[in-house]
Image (cartoon, rainbow, N blue to C red; front, top):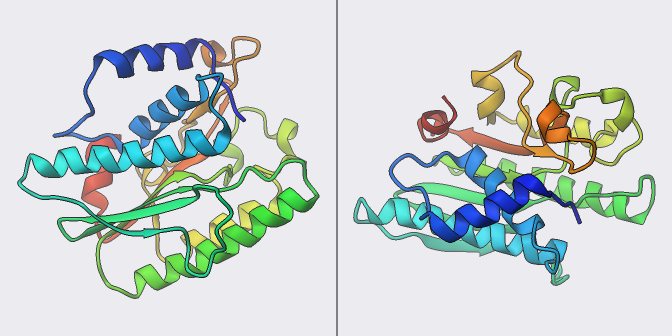
Length: 232
């Protein structure tokens, strides 16, 4: 389980005092904020944190929709044909004709090994399902913790992560194959040369030094306006 100390504690306090964003939902930063919240709770396991983030993200979309007189409709939990493993990896809903999928891709460490094999298998299943979503011809947003840094620009010191399951060539290749289907990486499209991270460890003042990684991503198709409003 990942953990965040000062930033996580601050996020926890913010959640207790602030309401969910509505009229201008910053999806990428808000999801990162939720991850900090979940991971800062020392009694919360990884799957519990994932479930909390997914449900709260859908609640945020729901609240935003209610301001416009709409209600979300859950369409799926888990990928097609995925066995019930008790893990919360994918949840999906539609709001105003927009399909929103939230995912939590397995970490995969240590790599190589069974956990890494499971990560690659789930990633391949997700790539297949994502392609089927494109065929529907509707606006789609796929937001979540992909547990992959796609390029050297997405990690403070790439040389430290060469053998990590979040940065190995296999997972980076999987992410690029997913994006090549026609998905827009919202943050990288708006900030093509900027080092922007979504996670910082709690050791050695990593947050203060901006020693982070970008593992949370927003991929979209046919509805880039929703993403870009928050990321600008």
